[in-house]
Image (tube, rainbow over all chains, first blue to last red; front, side):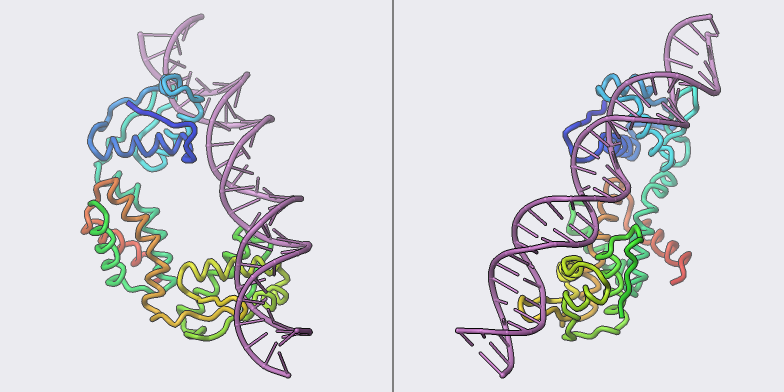
Length: 122
Length: 122
DNA sequence: TTAAGTGTATTAATTCAATTAGTACACTAA
DNA sequence: TTAGTGTACTAATTGAATTAATACACTTAA
């Protein structure tokens, strides 16, 4: 289900995080569903278990999964909208800090956002 | 006019960039005004001229200043709004990428922005 | 043409954070 | 007890980032 490229400049655990977030956002992984164990996924991907653990910890810190020692890791049962919000919040925070520093108004900021999203595929 | 802390974890050239951006955004540095030469600022701050040059190059890539070899570096004469927009664009881009990945609507994104800026001082 | 002033290219030293893996430990459930 | 779960700790390694030394290139004015 997941793939990884050890030669990529993007760290392995970040590759995993991104794939799992996408899967959750698209509903391919559902609330309560159990993730493969760190050892299982690690042996499948031929990486160290700690690397998978790192990805799971990152996902847990962003509220995508819940981990129980000795039991396993499970997709969070929080509302998906809430989970997504938690995931994007840091980026919003960064943008707001810069906007503050430059004294850019909310209106201007919103216009920039709209334009940028129109230019991309979405 | 500028100060620098070599012990900070924030790179010296980034400290300079931030200070100069603030000064421009606040109108303390005006269009066309000449910046101190790299050697002059470097000797004032007791850093290597290349470090100041690096800051100036960063500022030029963000359209805050214009540099002419042999002449010096000058505050850009672009409209300040345009300059500020260029400075914030990369952050907007990042946010939009993540929003796309998570399928977050513009409306939700804007609401998050408003809330975040209300929470901060601005 | 010369001299003094400007920014910059190139190279290298150094530091430092990030990444990953090895190993041993801790918890859960049957 | 055993097999399965995640994790803490440590260390090796890599690689990017930062800074500095030095020499070069351009501009201006005398």
